[in-house]
Amino acid sequence: MATYADVAVLAVHQLGSESSVSAREAWKIAAAEAFPNSPSMQAKGCPRTIFLTVCASGALAGIAATGDVGDSENARHALDCLVLLGKHPSYVDMDPRKLWVLVTDGSGKAYNQQMHVVLGLAKAGLLRYSAQPPILLARSA
Image (cartoon, rainbow, N blue to C red; front, side, top):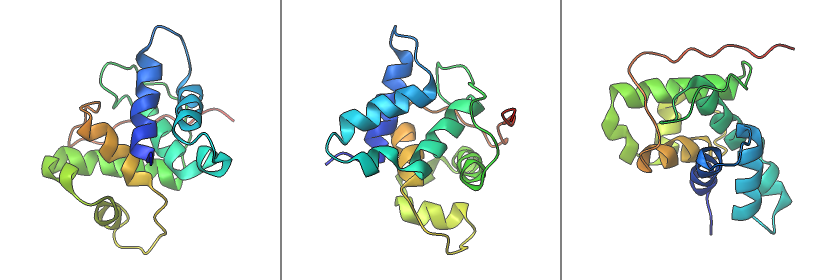
């Protein structure tokens, strides 16, 4: 069965293809491909927000920053995760739920597949990250 890591990688391939699609549309296409019989999995917001934040931050190798996502708790978690992976590259091999506990400082916040997205991109060699926090500009209302 497909995972949100698979969706993220498929979405990056959509972004890198010759067709010009937005990050949001690339995620939608990839989610429909990965979960053809599950509209609820296609529509799940937490993994999508993480992916869009990674795109917005410019952390995707070979893809320009999109600036497509505003500030949210999940967006902050995505950026925190990128910084954490920049400081500790070996965390790429960590269990996604354990990474989530680190990213959320053990807050007990429910895990909704967010780290699967970042780790999937990292393991596929699609991320560039550093120990410095990426800059994310909030989208205009």
